[in-house]
Amino acid sequence: GNSVTQMEGPVTLSEEAFLTINCTYTATGYPSLFWYVQYPGEGLQLLLKATKADDKGSNKGFEATYRKETTSFHLEKGSVQVSDSAVYFCALSSGGSQGNLIFGKGTKLSVKP
Amino acid sequence: KAGVTQTPRYLIKTRGQQVTLSCSPISGHRSVSWYQQTPGQGLQFLFEYFSETQRNKGNFPGRFSGRQFSNSRSEMNVSTLELGDSALYLCASSLGYAGNEQFFGPGTRLTVL
Image (cartoon, rainbow over all chains, first blue to last red; front, side):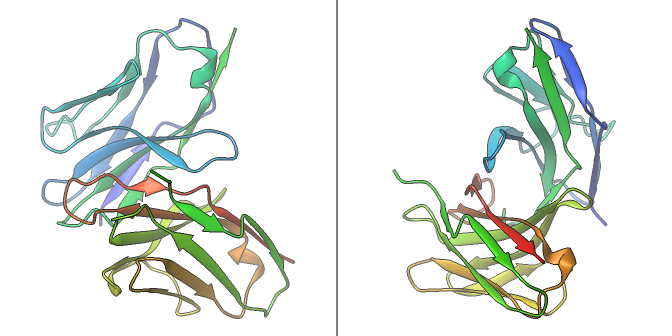
């Protein structure tokens, strides 16, 4: 079945450091891929998405490229801020509707000033 | 535009009881999905409703059920509560078509004693 594997956390970085959170997936067909972020006490917010191979999603300085050959969708940011501290989830959706997201376990990021 | 709202935000029940959670989607959204979030299992898809019909279902026992009303508001019900049902229950709404973003509510925190 479909699944998502992302790097275990927690990840602790200093402000302005480079961030990479690895995400790989297993899916039949051509899934859409997403990164969601969850701040403490809140629901999930879509950070970025890519719907086909070689697409690059980007938002708020975060980027991820849909790599079909390596079944990966790694999240990167060149310079993290304290406000980026949150839990990040990689997810995929296969099939026509978007009502069935499969999530990775989540990676908690803490950014120290 | 108002976001996805979930009520109640917090709930404490005892084993064997039943509970009903409510979700009001963003105006115009016809799809509502429910997810369970626990520290051990992460985020797991429960079911999706689109235009009052269950369109997708996750791998949960029949004690978990849901419905959607003509105004797209949705409820989920858990009967005969077990300790393991303690979780954050998240609702997400979308237009319901491929490529549409899911917007998440803040969740209902259910504690089963």
